[in-house]
Length: 288
Image 1 (cartoon, rainbow, N blue to C red):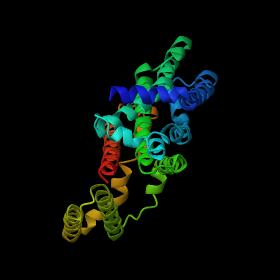
Image 2: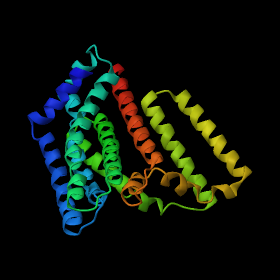
Image 3: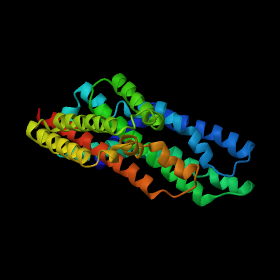
Image 4: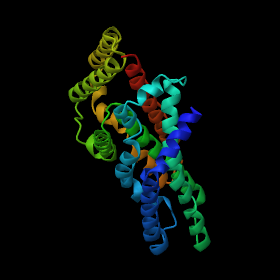
């Protein structure tokens, strides 16, 4: 894994990709830091970080689009897949290299709360907690890009797909508000979610028996719970999906100034799940 990590990290700085990502993030963080903290006198650096989140939608697809797709397009993935390293080590090496690139501008941003403290009142604990949440949110979005890049050999498709996925995540709270709140509507919505999960499981495992068992057990559980107490399904769909709002978890740090352990757990869990799914995608291609 160390060799893969070094190779990938070096590749980001042999071309402009790594430098462009770092420069873009630093420029926008600097702009909002000057606007909110230095000029307007806001004591919370988290305000500037919150305003910078939209940059991830453009910068992260640029960083992740070549992570898996380039090797597949150039057929160099066959060399990696036949190497002594495991698929998990290969994927983790690539992911950790991207995390290292992300950590560089985040590390520079850690100086900003100290600058605020030198010029007045600062809330260092709240700001550094927000920086941690900012980094973990970026880690989740990097995992999204890594997973989408593993699905295609086209860097353009990987970049556009990642941008689309991140846009949906950015608008997640607003989209959830349009979901049905009636009991029957929630039942139908949860059934659709179950079908999507089964589709993903079947695509990764290519085992229809496992997929059928999950679908059957899930359908029985949903219908049984609905028949037992249909009133409990009222508003259930938006309530469940709303818990996966990445921006809401970040707002707990940046706006409410609360150390949201559940939000951190959400970020770490989603990043781990997406990396695991990427491993499964690559592993399946290794044998087919």
